[in-house]
Image (cartoon, one colour):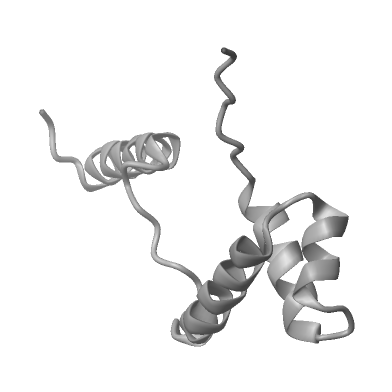
Amino acid sequence: MSEKKRQTFSADFKAKVALEAIHGVKTLNEIAQEYGVHPVQVSTWKKELQQQASTLFEQKRGPKPVDPIEDPDKLYSEIGRLRMELEWLKKKSGISR
C-alpha cells in the first residue's frame, strides 16, 4: 500500500485560485477541475480571502518602521558615522581624550 503525500500549495497559488473564484466567471467546480484541487478547498480559500481582504488596507501610509533586527548593517553604519562625527567634534573643540 503506497502512502499518498499531502499536497501543499503556495500562497500565490491559493490567492490566484481564490481571486478567480471571487470573479465568478467560472463555477467552483470548473475552477477546481482546472487547477486540480477539490471544490471545497476552492470555496475555503475564497472565504479566507474575503475575510482577510480588509486587513490589506489597515496600515497607514508612509514608510514602514525599520526593525533593527532585520537590518544590522544599517545600524553598524549609523554607529560608525556617529563615532566619526564625535571624533571630529572633539578634535575641533579641543577636547582631548
